[in-house]
Image (cartoon, rainbow, N blue to C red; front, side, top):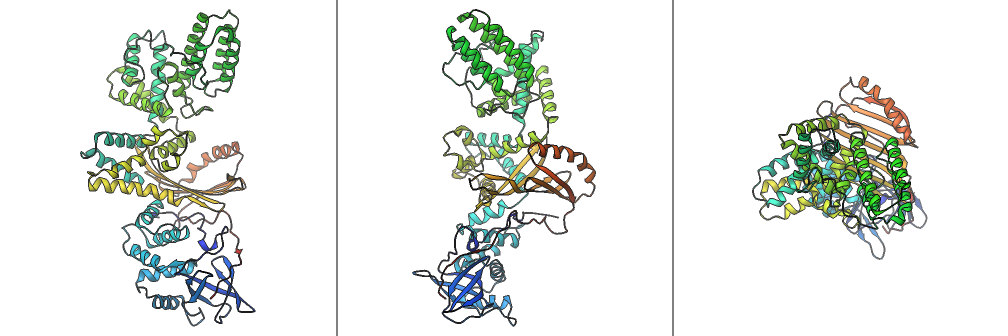
Length: 629
């Protein structure tokens, strides 16, 4: 099977069959409807799609007849004219389409006939201008794009009342693809590396961001290196050469100031009163800023912070509590507070450094990682998580470039540790990291007062906007940037709400330790009355393009918190590989209050993609709309 795009999980509801609004027609539109039942005074029930409405007939029509109707007026009431004769035993859909082509003076091309046949079946209103534009698109489809996908895209544009523009059409077409994102990124990176026309700053920013997306675990590798060099600096038994190499790499990476020495590198930062106690460094500053007469309240604050800290072990918390109890038993002076602050700093430095390996992909209640706490304990500047990530990447880069044996050994150990830590949390982290740095929906975050504008500015999509505005951009570079933009815009346009239904589509180019893959997630669920996602029902498809297993589709259905998983793959010998993983999946789902019904391994139907049914059945809606025919 070769699937270039996915089928919708939840078939799009026609604009005329929406459960939230009555039939709304515009002048010039054409649609196919059926007379369902006749009533006295020339009234009739007409069905269009799944919606029925009452219409007033000016000419006698038969119940059961199906016609093409065209809207000729909308004010003060909607007026329709019959464009084709009734669908009877002696006539065919093609005959009705030919009548429509003659009546509306439309081109009798194969593409136009395909369009009318598609919208006749969908029973969706479409105007003559829209038909003519759609015909142009069908005639000029790029290589690799099928007419079936194009027809579904055009239908979605009509349903959601999107502008009938080339940008929207190509964005939606590209947004439906389940592969190729990695290829687009590679092509863009290669052109960027050779480009000499862009401004040096923009080119550097783009190259850094491409690198960040290609290495989603680089920050964690930096975190492990940071922990190892800090352990060397705080270990009295460590060799002096190791300590000097550790100090040097931290200074080169901008983590420590150039004037730092082995004696003063961990000096406590200048105290700032009245600050929240979140980062470990703020805990130390609070101790230094406290007046002796407020020592008892300080200890209570420290115990509360320690009790809520999820990145420390119970044994470490017990040791720190013992330190606080000893402090509580001595007379409190400014000098004893300073000594206590230094002892607390040393304890926290050692504890967080020790925990880095076991908590690589864990954050506390304030979304802070182990490395964030470590950096806060000795850096003079207070950094945002984004700035800390930049420092970690600098640390990895300088470690790779270093010729010092201790640093090279530390880098090798850090790489191995991160590779051996691959689990579900690591995969979740990788997806979030790549999506965040792509910046697919960065526009939506700009209005958020708490948004990190510095982080947003460095995301790939806003930088692509900047690149496309450059007047000296080469045609090849502009085309590569536009293709990336089109793919990301397509994901946005393909995601959205339809009543209580909500669909989300994400395609992520992933690279794990030299192995590249495209991962596409298509999620469909329903919203509760309070606007929150209903976690009891959902449908999730994962489309994966992997080097060893090639194309793989995972179809996960959730009905009343009962989960069924079906894996589609061409390889028939993956069943034994899946068996050991089922128990772990069952346990993991149970921890989230879900029940695993079963895991099924299937091969693709030849020439077909995995077909899925609607998540929630839609019921027919009736509305009383008088239409004059």
